[in-house]
Image 1 (cartoon, rainbow, N blue to C red):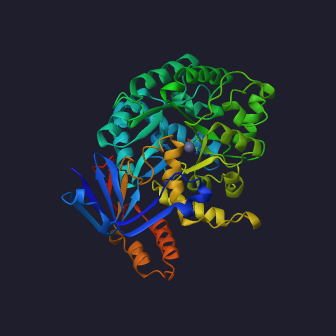
Image 2: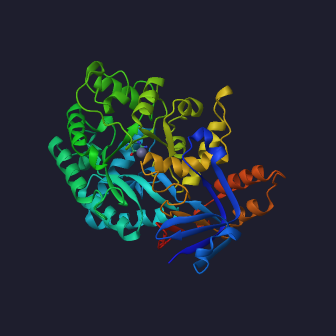
Image 3: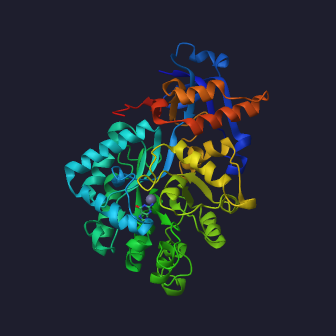
Length: 468
Ligand code: GUN
Ligand code: ZN
């Protein structure tokens, strides 16, 4: 049975790169989305809905908005209760003092089940229909995450966080080299496309997730390269962190370069993890690889990511929280690498992708001198939707409302939050309809908070919101 959703539709049509997002912005104030068999059958003006859908059920969301489901390309499941943890320092101190102990609590299976439920609650409340989820070290916690995600109807790519070395506080998260490979392979065999047995239609996918280069050895990276070679053609993903903290001498980047003796941090993930950046194994880069942060990349690193189709999860909320700096927008875009949005919760302290887009706008307009850029509202929407689907290599399935795509929809009812309603109703708008649409979209993305998200759909099916 088809359904017709009525509201103001915004989406980024087609397959643009970020620089062309403004030309691809679609705004249909009196719009309709027809969903049939879980897919978009029509997206256009309400008064032009094809006659074949005349008897379809109407879901009237007016004066609300219809947006594509948000895609979070970097979020930490075992940090669900670790947001706003006071670390007394930047990344490495925060990990050691707050995050490793918080993640160790998932060793308790009851706790793991509880946190998996809350993680899904938070995702639905935030309209995050698809996500690359940095997983727990514990297989039972990953089982809980995948089971609950399947039950709730969300999309997920996730893998257990792999650590073979680390400080004492990470002790519970560290395994032997052999177990790191064994457990990761086991997770792939158990959960990759487990819902449909077909990677092209699945909502559940598995990634190989070394925490970052400081959590693994050259031996681990060699083993993971071999493992990836053996599962790449099954559509398995890779996810990790890159170039986040550049504190001189003792920060993440200098420590990676010193310990591995490599010329660039990226080399450690590109098979060149031996001293002098010599080749020691296979590359982990590719179209199904997402690297979080990438704040301090060299031009050569960006070029290599673009060449391999690797994507960046841009996480400005987290970068502000951890003092990691600002990813240079113009230079990173110019490299051609795909950039999508990530909350990095609990490094970030927001679950909502539009909050990430809002901080992206603020940090990039604040870049010094000629680097300052005022992001176009369409670029912001692109980052949080279509670019995320592209980063997950599932752009052919979701990310916008092109006809034939699977219907992932976020319904926004501004009336649920007075501040947003006022901004939408009374904000000054240009007499030029195109500019007025951009102004409304900007107000919506900047002012959106979870309570204004009234309904969330994946593949046309409404998700149960759970507690808020
Ligand atoms: N680098 C390694 N682990 C983490 C983590 O949990 N969060 C962030 N932001 N960076 C990391
Ligand atoms: Zn992270």
